[in-house]
Length: 216
Ligand code: CO
Image (cartoon, rainbow, N blue to C red; front, side, top):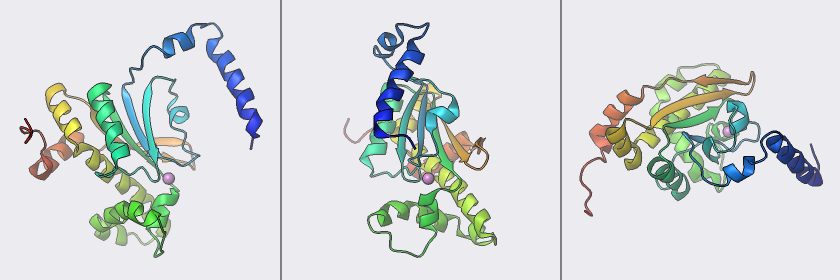
């Protein structure tokens, strides 16, 4: 663990690295952002979004919360999606979960988790939706891994339920929505290969928000 003061020393080194041979790095960076990716991941300190993707400043718009939840009444994540899709015009939206996720584990336990109860209720709802599949997995660790994956899948569905994603995709053919799981045990990033066009088609039976607005 590094000391508090070390952070500012590290920052100086980082500036030197970025500007070596590229003296206008920060001048360019400060002008604008044009990221092609929106990444929605867990706040877990071990899952460092940019580092594990090999991304540079300006390349990924990022939102992180406990257990990478996309809740319809969370003004924070909904604002991020709205801005990323309609203003930045991102081409890809990624929901990235991770094995050994403390939030997902907590949601599997019969405990009062205080303030976290309503937040983790979103994950208990994922369990309920996939109860038959999950309960059929006898090994508790494998069941936990599978809930991590299903949580990513359901949060992708929640992204696809938004009007911003539906309307932009119909008009422009993007953003595409992807579900990933980061494996802390190996460092590997796994693409769950969710079938985005199929999910979009399926959910539009109920969640179609592409029609004329009430307020027009
Ligand atoms: Co986590």
